[in-house]
Structures are given as structure tokens and as C-alpha cells.
Image 1 (cartoon, rainbow, N blue to C red):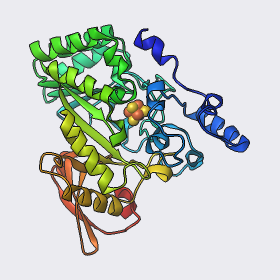
Image 2: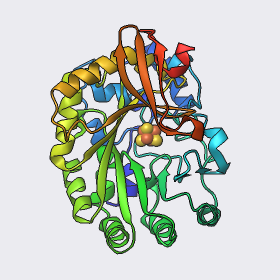
Image 3: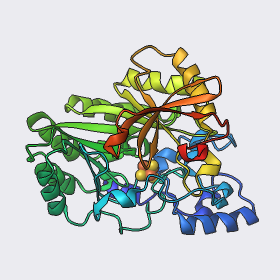
Image 4: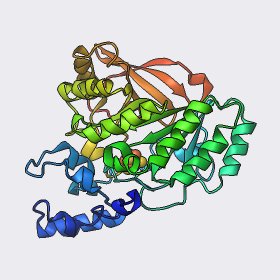
Length: 366
Ligand code: SF4
């Protein structure tokens, strides 16, 4: 079976979910409404990792729609991606990085996605013209790397991925190419059933420019033997893997889980990179966002259980003004530093706010 065919067996409606756990009539009606607004999609592989006997199963919380999504607090574009968009599917927020939105699809849909406004829904924000992006990058020599994101770029056919790599790796001013993905977690067969993809990645990474994969993983249960096989294949192909994790209420909000996750990532060859504060996204904030105060405490406790290598990640907030690291709390103040700034005047700026224990985002302090 091809990976495309296999993905067609994803669970994408509430009636099919009833085979796995009890859903009341009222819940069923409301969940159907939610799914109409924000589609559900769960690969059979990921479904097999969920323990439906456990009402608090963390994987279930991440992927199965819940009534908490009826809460509309928050916004759909928390990082102001609109203002960074130079043309359809191409964003330029930080001077050295170009961001391509290559697709609106993923192998499964995270309920906490910060691009919930478009995922599985609309192609409106997706790159239509790769040549235009290439021209833009060539004309902006300050861009030394490109992040291919979406959606999940590995949803694209291998032929299209090869075309992206062929054109991007030819740009002299680019030092490396990055892909952001959760497919090795959700659907390892994308890599295991398509040997050609590995061949392509190896070809460009070894002969032309380094390729980095930023692997999204939120919980140690997601580190399966299948994921490890994919990671090994990628490492053998010369790809460098970094991790990113969203800190999520009811999923990974404990020092034990977070430290286990980081240790496991390092043990399989993935370098800790970022832990993201969950953005205040509509239908996400209420169910998943922790206050920064709490998040900071959990992460500091987790760090006590980690060696230097495993705690190389930064705890950051991807704010519309830049990537802001949460540095510390002292007395009644919380300290931040711009790790990446949209506006140069904020570059590396260190600042503090009066601590509000319930604040989940920078704007909550104003
Ligand atoms: S894999 Fe990434 S883009 Fe896709 S639904 Fe999850 S968070 Fe969103």
C-alpha cells in the first residue's frame, strides 16, 4: 500500500470515533459542529497509541476534538503572520529566515495547532508560486535559511519536495534548509513506505546544503520504535534533527514528563531546540495554555532532572514582536529576553514585567 492510500484510512468523523470510546448524544452533536469548523484527522497509527480506557490519555487530548473547543477566547493569528506575509505562502519576519507555507494539510490534525485558522481548511495562505519565492530569497541576501512549513511539508509528494530542494539548494546565499514536521510521529510510514523520499533528502543534504528537520514531539508516548527507525534513517542520510515541543495543559505539564521527553529525544538522536509556550489561539487557549508562571516553574523543575545536553532547549513565546525567551522569576517580577526580534530595536532586549500569576502571554501583562 502507498502512504497516500494508507492516509485515506484516517479517522475524520465523529461517528467513526464512537467505535473507540463512549460519546453521549449531546456531545456527538456538538463535536460534529466543532469538526465542521476545524476538521479532525487521526492516523490509524496514532490512534493505536491512545489508551481509550484512560480518560486523561495525553495523546487523546492532543488529537481528539473536545467540547472545550467551544471556548472562543483568543485569536486566530496570534503571531500576526498576516503582517509578515510578503506574498501568498511566503513570510519574512526575522531577517535571516524565509518561511514557506507549503501546504495546509497534515497527517493528523493537532487540536492545539496555532495555524488552526487554515489547517485542513483552506489553501488561501499557501505558496502558489515557488519561482516567486526563489526570486525573493535571491534578492534578499540577508536570508541565509529557509523554513519549509505548513501544514506539514512531508504531505507534499516526493516529486514536489525534490523540486523545492533542487531550487532552494541552488541559491548561493542560503546556508541550510529546514523542514518543520510531525509526520514521523503521526505517520512514520510516510518515510518507511517511500524509500525515494529518503534518497532525495540524502542527495541534497550530502551533496548540496545541510538539511535540518525540526521534529515536533509533545509527549514521551509519541517516541515509538517506528519513530526511532525514521530518525535513524534520517540521521544516516545526513539530516540533523532538532526538536520542538509545545507546553500543553493536561498533556506534558509535569517536570517528570518533560524531562523524560527531553532525555528520550536525546537518546534517539534528536537535539532539544525549543519548548513553546502555547499560543492564545481561539478554541485552543482555554484547553491547553498554562500560565507562564506555572510553565516556568515546571520547566525549571524538569531541568533539575536533565543533563546539560538534554536541557539545551529554550522556553520561548512566539510573540508577534519576536521569539521571547522566558528567563526567570524573582520576587514579584518575571524576566524576558528577545531571542529573535521582528524589529531590530528589540534584538536581544532584556526586560521585565510585574508578575501576574495567571498571565499566559506577554500581552496579558499590559
Ligand atoms: S502538525 Fe503542525 S501544522 Fe499540523 S496540525 Fe499539528 S501543529 Fe498544526
